[in-house]
Image 1 (tube, rainbow, N blue to C red):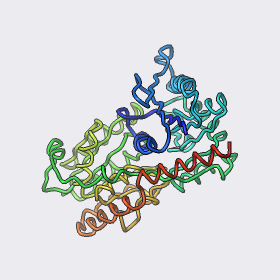
Image 2 (cartoon, helix red, strand yellow):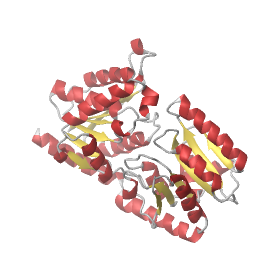
Image 3 (cartoon, rainbow, N blue to C red):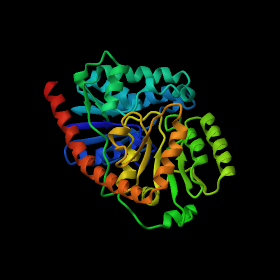
Length: 383
């Protein structure tokens, strides 16, 4: 089967969970189908075609620039038997290909525009366009993949015109041969961490969705013996960037051992940081699944995370970590949960071991790819 995988992010330009998903899914799909990846960027390599926004739109709203990439991708996928798009950045390209070539369009929903109203802060009127693109594509797609059961419920609530029979749950995966405990410490040394003190670790983008301001306020009152490491970059807007910087400076004044790493670290360094963390924290206010929690679990680290979206399908409360309700007491709940894990190293170790076992047992990418190809075959047969 000739498949076109359509995405904004693809290595080396990966900045979020959707990009991680596509990277590993593509790796496994290559042995199962004839795959071409179409993504943003420059140049072409074997099996990967990169597209850039039209130069005539330099400086224009990002939504318009995205649509220009979608047109380029749609023109380039002629000859594919099926296209599979990821995120609103690529969904319209898949929809155009479906109409133009009469081929099935499968789309994976990693998040939903109606549930991210803060994007209006980033895109302005472009948020109306991104929402239109997502709605147009999702309501016409031959199949919609939800990365969690909770995500499936959100999809059907946001888009009631969508036939529930076309929405399929295929969880995100994790490469547990790559994400596994690494007990070397050179990455910790480069950060400047004190090896004799435990640390709380956050890895993610600086966005409203990831709940970073909540975390910065919550860790003010966490056990002062713990260090705090924030691998946080790619702010959505200047406003959230300024808010983060102000909160970080305030946090640094009230406690020591606070480290901010504003750049994307190499994967090997992230794995070391995950391995040695006393606890990983995911304070998202919206999260369809949360691959980063799987990454932490695969490295044998207990997780404190918000009880939102698909996170409870990954983090088993009291077994692989602690879930915190994202209500009016969210920040104090985060503080309490982090202190509970930090204060009981033996229980934390058992949670980490259970998390590793769960990641290996239930979330391998090979199984995800096989389920995805099974869906492709079913859709093509029906077409």
